[in-house]
Length: 497
Image 1: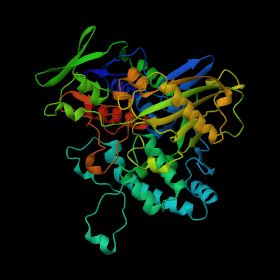
Image 2: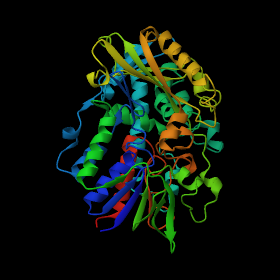
Image 3: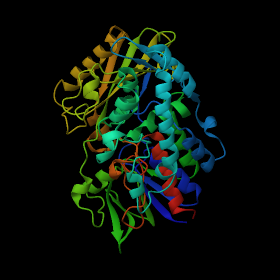
């Protein structure tokens, strides 16, 4: 039995703690804040409740596996999991609306034909077939297995680029971006282009820089479905925390780690304000960049500039407490697309200043647990914006003025929310940074193949023996499913007691 200290009680830290304790290890989790869950937070007031981080779940199989591997009850006995159907409703600047079914590529194709004209669905389906090619090529190395010692094969984008013809064969080939896919395979159709770009922009990628293989993001959502946890995603964090308690994991809240202790070239514990905690192994769920930049750990042979933030955008949210019942037939997820597609396709889309009318995700769950009664509704608006530091979200009036613009943008699309607002809470990337320690409050992005390895994350086995890395800044990247996978990979690397 090894004594293991985990830094951070976010979802990856909870998942790793429950798995390692089940394998027979003695696990202690040090969390700087007073609670668990990390990005999966919750805000409650006057009978309203809101998820302050992700509101939907993809690839629930990750947490089904966690539940089965760490206890007797399956995930569906721990939380109430429901598919989101329809998966989303999309509102475009020209007034076009399209509603997409959940986990039905055939249904998506029919909806696109109805909205954009015959042949639109077939064109989209062909791009999603290429997304499936990317999925099949990258699922194991990018999601299920440790990052290989030589990751160079992952530097190539597996998206099947059509062969060049004519004089183009004489020019040196350039890797395709998501912009190339939109222009050359979707014909630049504004609606289809917006649908292709939306998942990438949500994760903080600009379509000009994201490799063509980013088509795997909409492919995964439309093929495997999107799910909701009744009571909000915080209920999932509660369930995994209870599983940790069942497995006798020790939690020390309000206990920030100040240093990873390295002796004889190996991690041997952590320092905290309350003193040293000795360990055989250390697993860090902290942002790997913050771990190094704050001096908590040093990687042999890597200079400090290696850990400089790379302009990863953050999340801006507006929590709305609304008077009046949720209108019948309202979609759980509505996407109001940007009014200016050109900036969205350029590197300036997520730059400074933030877009006046960005693509906005509107979550309106039909969940009595999130509202005081059926005469009210809780709604969350979310947009991807520059992180704190790239833009000063703490300047007087800035956040409220931007929230006003988002509300105006969604109401122009016909949602009619402003007149129903009882009160609102505005959350910026600075709130995320303060609560979770993520540099600048940045969005944790998933790993993508291609771009010469630019999007690969830190390996789960750090250069310091005995120190493992998990969470959104480690392989295989951000998002609820991926951080759960990082915990699984690390637990498998450590093995049973």
